[in-house]
Length: 239
Image (cartoon, rainbow, N blue to C red; front, side):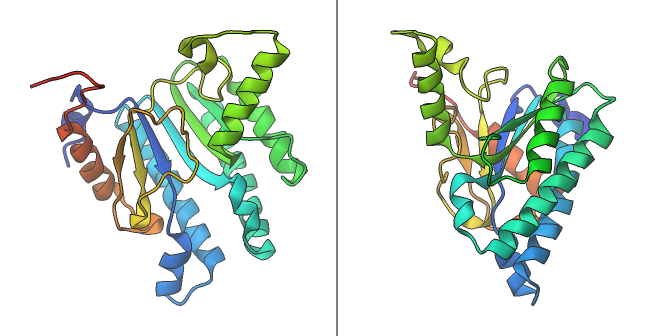
């Protein structure tokens, strides 16, 4: 695995989105609880963030918890909230002294989110807002339709009657991020599940069958090679 060769390839995506999927199925195959699947998934997430940053990819968006995930069993949701608090502590300990900006996309005013999660997320956003290096975007209590509606309501509040695409994007969570080039959804499910509907209009999609806890560095390299072989035309005709 020649990391330097991959880093120097100009076809490398600048912004990757990852829909984490398959934690529960991975655990079930091994006789574990769904919560243990999420725990192993969280450990893998830490490795993948570090690897993506090492590859020189500028932006990473991770779909951690959707607005629809509140419908899962309370025990599972409670454990995920505990993991999110640990994740935010991990971000603070690891990235606060680095040139890494943390964005948390989602409704952080929702009282269903534990207060510690809300406060720590808002603190990280504020503490890292002036960083100009790697951008790590974690989507927690996120829904793409909700994001668009929130943007529209903000436009109305600002008394704007007409905007172009660039102006509208300034009201999205991803306003300071690069275009979303590539979306990976693990476990073989072939849908976006309300992840970044505006941002994904020209994203390349990839659906490996491996569940998230088993998605290792070799799988990420394979995914990136698939992306780099794609002929991205954006509606034009290219050879």
